[in-house]
Amino acid sequence: MNSPQILPSVVVPPGGGKIIRAFGDEITVHLGGAETGGKFTMFTAVTPPGGGPPPHYHSNEEEWFLPLEGCVEFFMDGTWREVSLGTVVFMPRGAVHTFRNSGQTPLRMLVHTAPSGFENFFSRCADEFARPGPPDMQRIIAISAEHGIYFVNG
Image (cartoon, rainbow, N blue to C red; front, side, top):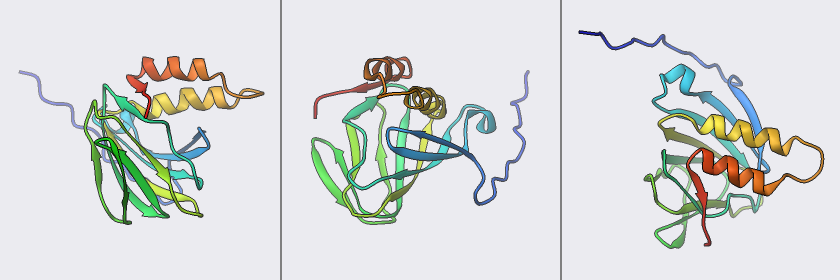
């Protein structure tokens, strides 16, 4: 009988992690699939005032959020809902959702996705946003679909 693989412990100091920029957001990946054996991704997301993704759903991941700084509203179950800092918001796989920074300062949230893989999606999109000129949104939609993320009309 095979024993389960024991992963090495990981310590990520403050300011550590991989920084990725796309969609006007900056995420710092603290733990990704490489560190968690593919079980989850943990990152801090910073979203500018008015920012946030279009309504979408994930066919691969569960996603949960912990707002740390700023003001945030979540679209879930067909309605917008403002939540206070420190509130945990869970979005199950397949649930149409989004969020927006409803304040005047950057929004900072701790975000988890399970299983891992979101960091790969965001890195691929960052490559598209880094190209000269505006991003090719059809390419972004295709990358999203390859990672099981689908945009819907809100």
